[in-house]
Image (tube, rainbow, N blue to C red):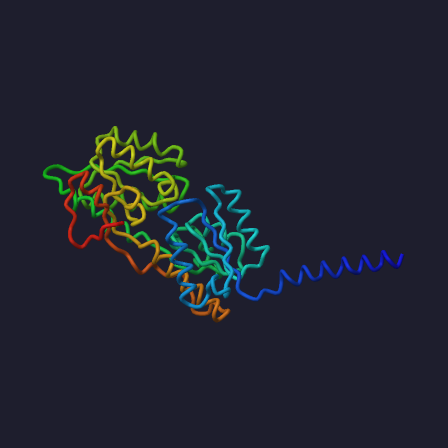
Length: 323
């Protein structure tokens, strides 16, 4: 009996010791979740991590631990990742893009969530009945104003000699912000004397079929609205458009790297960096006082030299070539 008692005590001590190891953390723990793999979104995480490092929170210096997870496009996995971060009591959660941000703030009201590559709280439908944002939502967001200057690039660069341009676009009808953006572009197209042909889709798997349907409507250009579906299916869209010699324009610099001709939009790296600076402030002060979602500050005009040459489009000097 004495031996059993000793063994029981040893087991209890081991359990207590194990629990203490998980609760006594020597450096902050940051959970970063990407909803899916995407080359044009990857710079956001790099920017976020660089901002932390500049402010003294570096994994190399062992002053922070960053647990990075990618949901690989699976809603179930995304939920599991967020729940895991909550169970681990991370100091903060960083999210990219919109679906990750929504998943995080829907599952915790305590852990600060720093969003990047996401729209405003209103566009994410996260405001409560008093038109208030979730109290734990911070980071860097974008509103719909960017669409005006982005879409305006098309007639500026294509300069139709006569008649009006016909521009095609697809939008994810399951994403509220995508539908709102489509409506905004529809209104803007009327002001610019552009005929807009828009078709809905439900997933990236529909992208090729829907894009080819658009290309059958004699469009002069394709506008790649940067919703989650387009981010996932960009290569498919560009390939289909190139086969019909239809240039693609967009509002995200990262999508220009992936085949669009030009864009005026947020710098994805700086978008993540801006959110990372907010997160670093929280880690320094252990307080969210004074923090709130900020509009992305850095936007730029960029173009893809190979695509511009292919379509014989003259690019103004105030556009920067993407690498």
